[in-house]
Picture 1 (cartoon, rainbow over the protein chains, first blue to last red):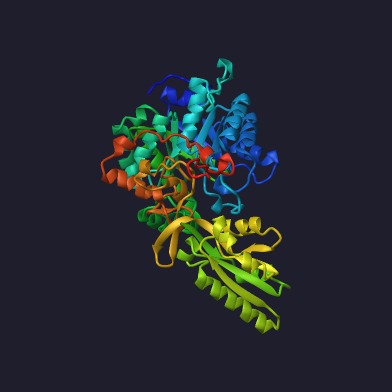
Picture 2: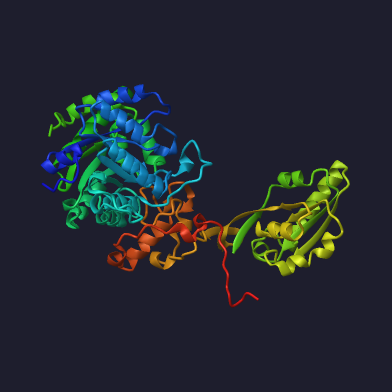
Length: 313
Length: 223
C-alpha cells in the first residue's frame, strides 16, 4: 500500500512504505518533573515508530500532551500528540495545533475525550465545542486548504503539516453502526486510525472485513490496538468496568488456567498471537501498543511479537 | 417546560436564620407542573418551616401566596399588597426567573431562591423528568431522528456515538441512556445510512448562551 506523503511524520513514512507499523503510548506524569517522561521514553526508543502522548486521559490532570510530546521527541521518539475536545474550544485547539506544529509535532490524534465525571475534577465545566470528527476536519482544512475555521488564510509555509489520527472502537455499540462512524472520520480527512484494546477477535475480524469492503482501508491506515492482559484481575476488571471493551470468557478461562505468577507471561503470549493474526489480516496496517504503566515491558514485548527492528526511513 | 427541584431544607433554613416574618411565593407555571413550587409545595415548605421554628422555640410567621406566573411583570405586580406587609425575607418558589423578577420589582426586599432550576425537559413518567433541550437557539433535532444530541449526549456530540457507548447507555452512568445509540439505531432501521453519511458540521454556538445573555424583541408585540 503506497500513498502520497503529506507530512514529515515518521509514522506516515513507515505506513506509506508498506511496513507493518508499531505505535506506543506514554502517559505524562501528574506533576512537572520531566524525568518521568524521559524514563518512560527510554523503554520506547527504537521499539515504536511513533508514541501517543495522552491528553489528560481519564480526565485526570497531567502534564500537557504538547509539553510531554516535546520532551519525548528530545529523547528520540516521534510524538503522536493526543488532543481531546473536552478541555478546549476551537480557538484554543487551533492555537495549540499551530504551536505544536511550530515545535515539530508531526502527528495529532483527534479524540472526544473521557468525560470529566471519571476524573479528578468532576466539578469542572466541559467544553465539547467541536467533536472529534469536526476536529479531524479542522486540522485537515488547516493543513490542506491553508485556512483556519474563521476563513483566515495561513501562508504556505505556515500551514501545520500534521499527520491526522483518530480512534475507532469496534466494541462499542451499536455494533453495526461502528464502521459507519469510522467512515465519517475517513470522510472528514483522517489519515490513520488506532483502535481501542482488542480482545474479541471475532468481532474485530467482522469489523475489519466491513471496513475493507467499504473501501475505508484504502483511504486511511487502520492500526489494531493491543494491551496485553497483566493478570486475571485486570481481565475481569476490563470486562466488567470499562465501557466499550469486550473481554471474551475464553480469555478469562485461559488466564484462569495458569498460576498467578505466570499470568503476565500468558497475557503477553495471547497478545503475540493476536499480533501474528493482525500482520496477516487484510486492512490492518500496524498495531498500537498500549502498555499502560507497563512501559518497561515494551522492549521484551516487541521482541516476542517480532515487531523489531523498526524501519529507519 | 422548566424542571426545578426544591433546595435542601437546611439551605432554606439558612436563608431565614434570625428572621421572624417570611413570605413564600409560589408559581402556577412550570414549577407547579413539575411539583416543585406550586400552591401545594408552598404549603408543604411553609409547614416544614413553621414546625421547625416551633420545635426550636423560635418565633416565625410564614405567609403563603402563589402567583399565576413569576416570569411576567403583570403578575409580579399582584404581590404589591403582600410586600407592603413588610417581610424579613421573601422566598420565591419559582424557577430562577422568579426571584430575579421579584428583586427587580421590589428592590428593597430580601429575596431568596427556594428552588434549584435544573433543566428544560419533560416527564418520562409520574415523578421522573429528563432533560431534552439546552436552549442552543438553533434547533437541529430533525437531523438526528427527532432527538437532541446537544442536550441528551453527555459530550454534545454532533457525530456520535463515542467509543464509550455500551449496551445503550452512556459511559458516564448506567442511568443515562446513550442518545446516539437511539439515533444510530433509528437511522439503520430506516435504511438511511447514506443520507446520514455526511459529517455534521461544527455547531455554531453563537445563538446559544455562548453568544452572551439572550433577548428576543418581537416588534409587532412591543407597545
